[in-house]
Length: 155
Length: 165
Image (cartoon, rainbow over all chains, first blue to last red; front, top):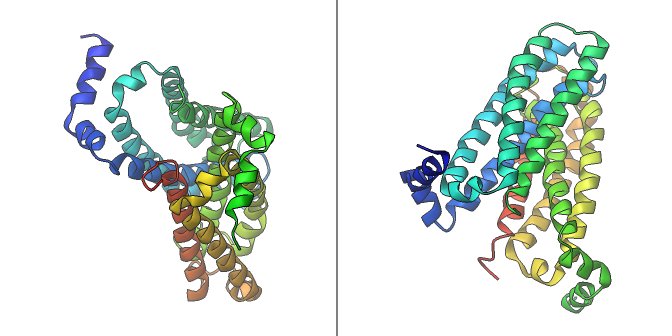
C-alpha cells in the first residue's frame, strides 16, 4: 500500500468524518491545540531560558526541569491528540502540503531531542557550553514545528 | 461615539491595503502573532500555575513573577504590535466581529485582574512567598488569569471563522 492510499484511508476514518462534517468541531479542536501551544511554550522555554542562564536562575537546572516536566507532558499529549484529529480530517490536503511535511520532520526531531537528549542532560547540571547549545537547538527545533505548522493553513 | 467611519478610513489607508494584499506579509504577521503566544501566554500560564498552587510549588512566587514576567512583557509587546497590524489589515470586518469584541473585553478584564492582584495580595507576598499553596485571593487571581487568557485565545481563533459576518 502506498502512502497516498493510507492518507485516503485516514480521511475516511470515523473521527475524520465526524470532525469534517461538524461546523464547530474543527475550530474548537484548533482552539484547544492553541491553548496547549501556550503551555508547551511555557514549559519548553522555562527550561531553555534556565539553560541559557536566564529566567528561574534561583533554582538549579534539574529542579526547573523537574517542575516543568508534568506540564510539558500534558501539553505535548494534548497537542498530539488534537493535532491527530485535525490531521485525520484533512489528511489529503496535508499529503500535498509541503509545510505539513516540514512540520512533521521538525516535530520528530524536537520530540526526540527534548525527551531523549535534553531530558537526560537536565537531570544533572551540565556545563555552560553544553547547556547553551542544548537550549538553542531545542528552541530552534520547536520554532520550526510552530512556524511550519502555521503555514499548513497557507500552502 | 461612533467608530465605524474611523475604521472605514483606516481600511483605506495604504498601510492597511499593503498588508491585506501582500502574499507574504499577512501570513508572516499572523505567524508571529501565533508563535509569540507561546512566549507570552506560556510565561503567564507558569506564573498562574504557581499562583493556583498547581505547579512550581517549591519556587518562591516572587522569583517566578520577577524572573518570568519580563519575558511575558516582551511577548505581550510583540503580540500587541502583530495584533494591531492584523487588525489594521481589516478593521471594518474585525471591529464588527462578535468574537473580536469579546476578545478585547476579556483582555481588559485580564488587565484589571492582574492590576488588582499586584495592588492587593501581591503587596504582602513576603508573607506567603514560599507557601506551596498561596492564599485564596492569589489562587483566585491565577485562576481568573488562566480563564480570561484562555478565552482570549479561543475568541482570537474563532474570529477567523465567518460565522457571524
